[in-house]
Length: 402
Image (tube, rainbow, N blue to C red; front, side, top):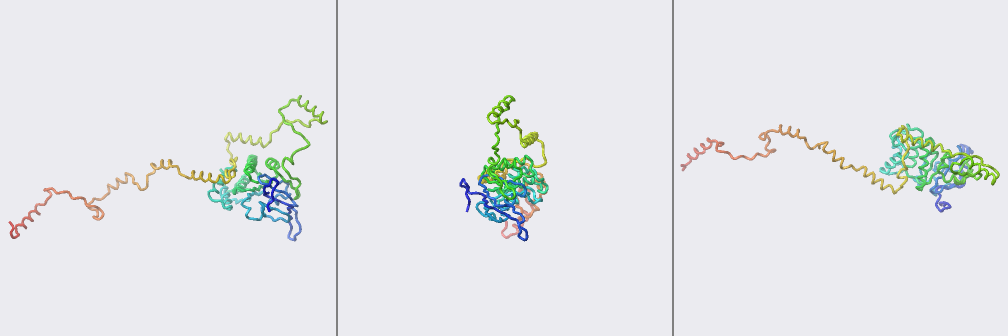
């Protein structure tokens, strides 16, 4: 049975009283990693899974993937048991540590995982190019993964998780090891995927990242849910009020404080000037350096979201036509190349002249191979007179001859 949410759509993930207990060889309880957890992940949302180390986040993710069996409770993914192989092709997964083949290049890695999902060769190559451009690894795509830094490894790991265009994306610490540029890019990517209709589970220790992108979140501690709800519900401070205006002079602030004191009996706690976020300042400095065309030897800022992730199946036909047009040779280049290189079957003028000079006389050629030249009419000077005399003598000796 598929559970439906309040909006009437089927829940992507449903957990009811989910429990996981690890036991030793003697079946004694070692740890209760997950203890009666209830939550749902709705379609087309970014769901945050938060908690300190050992709170049960990774255990829940492994049970969703079918890597661990639950001890008790209920857990479904797309309405089916997580161990059902049929749901695997709809899931993309980035583990906390990227376990990739260190001797394969980035391009070979994406080709390998694309083959595992049964993606055809042309689509696989197009998606590989788009993902490498998106995560900023095009210029180092020929280098083995073993030579990558941690941040570059996380980038190729994100690309690997997206190669099959998944409906449900599970990311465990996706921004770990990334610089602020890569972190901002991952957050922008998650928001783009959400707008396209993807469902995303985000587990991270960086609370600022979760706050920026998550619609709903769950906070775990000791294997139990301590708080859950939307970001606004959990983060709203109902005890204070923030008023944002243009820059005020001291006289105006004094009058406002007087009014507040008369109405509430307390004054203004603090007056501060707006402060820029460190992330925004860092990105501004890097963008200015990029405008000055300063080079970097590491991963670069990636491009836009891959076309197949933005357009889905609608972009498959356009990508095929585009690739066919690119593979088609231009006739102008072929035409321009012809005069430069003579054909192999056409000998040059020098070779022809040499062959004509060495050609033997017609008289020595075999009769079968050469056609005899037509005989020219002989002139009277060319006739042998002795032959004529012999014929005349023979004619005189005959009986009745004159």
